[in-house]
Image (cartoon, rainbow, N blue to C red; front, side, top):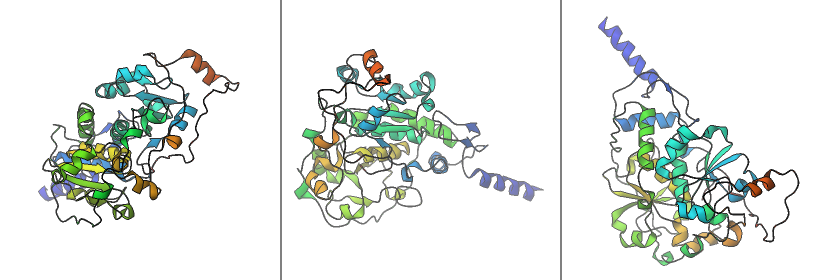
Length: 375
């Protein structure tokens, strides 16, 4: 009798797949039914299993979820835009219809105020695309499968808002390293303690924690990185051929969309609170990665503007994403003040007759950024 009981218990555990409790998990609308029962395993194991069973976003074709300004402008009637800049910047000029929400209030807003799933896309906007990518990464992991970050932020919307041009440089292009650094050590996964016992609840608790952590503490500039190289475990999140042409000294290569899961190289990341610095071409994809790592409990950071901030010409010469104002910046209208919508502008957008041409020419992009691309 006892043997039969143990067999039943083991079968139940296997059927649960080390997952979590029965519930229809939302805030996001992208996560589905969760198996019944609770299992007494480390929270990080339950979280990793749940996230893997929910689409493994970090390694999925839709990663990273970026959208360009032109696409947003052409779909103002069907996209819901959340501007996470400070209120002063928002009042100075925002996208028509965009609401201004502080990051710590975002979860409450999306679960209690607006039906996010009713919109084709939920577009998160910041000043330069770094913070919005991080926030969008958290939302995607929480199940908001229609969440997107606007590439290059408001800097790509109107030339009067430019947080990019004076932040790109070649300052450390002559300090790069060519040799490959071998990953020779493994670590246990971080021990997270939310007090929850199923993957869905742990995920939600971690998301709330991330949204309550000031984002200005998560960006470390190139000057500090090159000065304090030994303080970081550095992830060069880019294809091997670019890594081989020159990377931050001591940086390790991690292949995008395949290396950061528990079956591959996730256990090569230090879980002893050592700073993990993720960089890529523009800092935007790296911000998505940072969201994933911080949600798992790693002490992860990114570099503003990524490699654009210290090896711009090398990227440009290799045809990799760089910020060029003439190509990346449109000339779309700005709405002033605290009111999300300008009625006259909205009438023009909704009108069936063509809008009159503006004096300033809208600059069209030569290449359209797409979801799942590298940036």
